[in-house]
Length: 247
Image: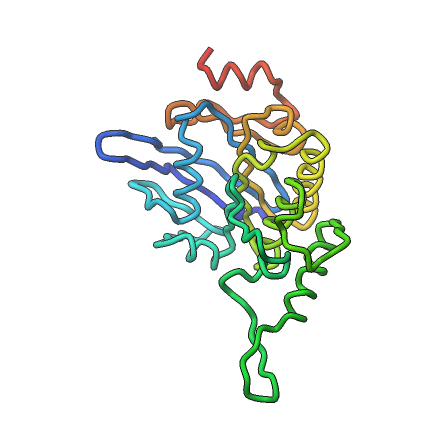
């Protein structure tokens, strides 16, 4: 494991007019590490991930990938550099299969009869199978529309898409929020799979139990400022809550 973090944020700031949503925030994510972001609504978590993923352009500071400074004009540019964000709504196309969702907007084309461009369904099906196997995830019908799937299964499809396009950093926004307990466990185990593959995960959650179950470190934000950073092994729920509310 090299010493250079996969992702490093240095003194990142973001202003909206006179409002400073993020102030000189620094954090790192290493390969095979899950870093949780915690904080109340308005603490700056969403602003931070949108700055990292190319939605917002930071007002100050820098973002480094594997030690090199990067700037993104769009989320597409961030994706091309290996940063995928999985928002709560997952942005899946309900009527399409797993393969259809993995290739959404980037559909593979083959030539039928040597000249006729058609959708390469085999490539899509193979990618779906391989990717889901990599996540140790099994559904009986790979060709079923994802609207048939449960919340945890849909989460797996969104993660699978990121993995297929070789995301090195996955930003997961409240991935367990709308799920029942068995489904939450499934997502936690998916995140453990990502760790073993050496990817970096930024995990945003209101659920401290999930944070403690999956993260290596936690960065606590309060009103756009870093209120503290702890190794999960060295802290408690109480300490994290105190950091969040400023006690």
